[in-house]
Amino acid sequence: MDLLANHDYDINNRFVEYDQVVPNFVSKNVREYCDRLAKAKAKEIQLTGGGKPPAAHPELSTASVAANAVNMEPTATEAFAAVVMVDVSGYSTLTSTLSDQGAIGAEILSKTMKGYLDKIIQTILLHGGDIVKFAGDAVIFYWKVKPSPKMSPADEEIERGEVVLKACHCCMDLLNNLGTYHIDVPQSSTDTLRIHLGIGAGKVFDIYVGGNPGRWEHFIAGDAVSQLSHVLDLAKAGELAMSHQALKFFSGVVNIDTVNIGDYDKRCIILHGLENAKRKISAPSPKEDEDLALWEIAPVEANVELYKKFINQSALYKLQADINQCRLFRAESGLHGLLSLHELRQVTTVFIKLGSLSRWETKEQLVEAQEAMNIVQAALNRYEGSLRQFHVDDKGATILCFFGLPPLAHENDAEYGIKAAMEICEEFKIIFSDFSIGMTTGIVSTGGVGNAIRTEYAVMGDSINMAARLMCHPEAHLSILVDQRSFNLCERILHFDSLGEVKVKGKTRPIAIFRPKELRIDPGSHRVSVHRNPADIIGRLLEKELVARTLSYSQSDSEAKAPLVIMMAEGGQGLSSMVDYTKQ
Image 1 (cartoon, rainbow, N blue to C red):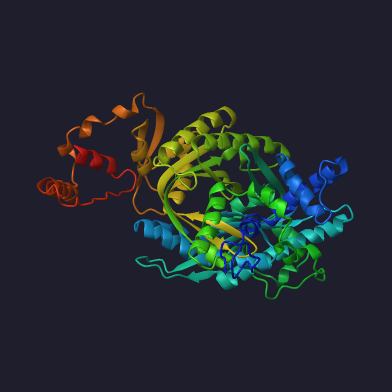
Image 2: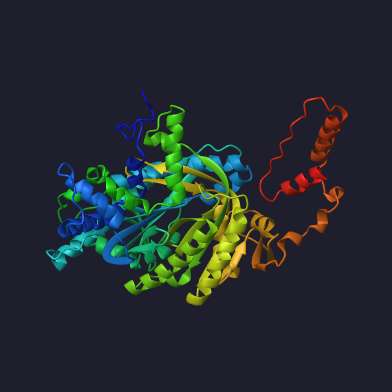
């Protein structure tokens, strides 16, 4: 069998094609949005005679023309939704512990979290939830009420209660089956992971922002999302917290006296169980569009081009590379096999928080979000970084960027990252009165999570958590904070202010933080005099002895085969100095 030929095998078990998997990387909402745009454009092309598709496949051919012709615009669509965020407790501690193990620790973290997240994702999809974002150890998902002019106000209230009830059933299923997840991690005291959840209900906006050079983002914001910032922190590990707004709609379809409720105060309600819950009205009949199979089927081929605009470039690159690798080595490249391939890299993380966009109340805030997106994309395009995501969660509005993920990887990614962060910072100061930026550098692991319906390449590592901690530190307000490794890698080109050491969540010891000031006039002159004399290198006794012995051996026997010495080290560990020592 020719493994490089095109095949139409089962996506879960055998060989899969690139375009078969791409749709799984976007939410159901994004797929429907792109499909509507492509269909409208195809109709326009047919009416104007701009495309003359062959009779055999008229719809596909017209859609192919339409997909390339669609011009997306920033939009904010209002609806009612029940929004849930599930967060893994114990993740920060586990991440910090594994960071001491270096690169292998990042890989263990990624594979450990994959097993847990796979099961969480499967449960959410079985209950009909639409996953909007994967945010590290958290997942944001929702159920929407689709507005209809035929729906009476009374029916609409019932429909709102029904989506909150669906959210509650899903959350209780998650807690009952995955509330405690046992793990076996070498050299770690953490042997279990737990989840806690929050539910908000009310107005949401489906936000679409993006543009040049072609990357788009979808996220949700509004009152229902804002409620999560209050209730999620009140839910302990193994608990579900519900906002009072969500309870109001929930009580419209369920008799509250039959529900197992724990704590009840003015901030939230802790829901313990629905096993004895009795409905006030009969359950509605299933709706046709709730059948998951309806959006598991392959979409019109050309619409995949629109989906790609919502997927970061590094994920698309890794997907294609993993498919090629599986075929090259004659391994099964079914979706399960693809998502099991992990990659380790040193990456610079730039985490941005936009305080002014933390609460969405009107569509007018779309302008601010689009301006932020324009500034970030321009900087990333100039310094070859990757936009991971723009989203709103319990921490507010955040933008996550990486420098060093393929295909945009460089020897000096930290320098690229700090220059981009400084450019973004200066532009933001003109527009926004409240923002902060955290930047770190470290080893991360990239690997897939999910299943045949919803998939994501998760990027995990302690340095990403630390970037979020720095971003939220008060000293980061209207500026940038960087960690020790980023400082070491960028000190050659930048002046920094040392802000001492601070305590952060997940670390037993304080960490050093720095604030970048301005570029050095002559970066090449910085610290040259320190190592002008090779003997000034401190330590490295074994390395010096090896170099001396190798050179001595080569000089004593000119006809002998020259021995080979390979020097390897992570960035900032003195590799360049050691090379200079060897040359001299």
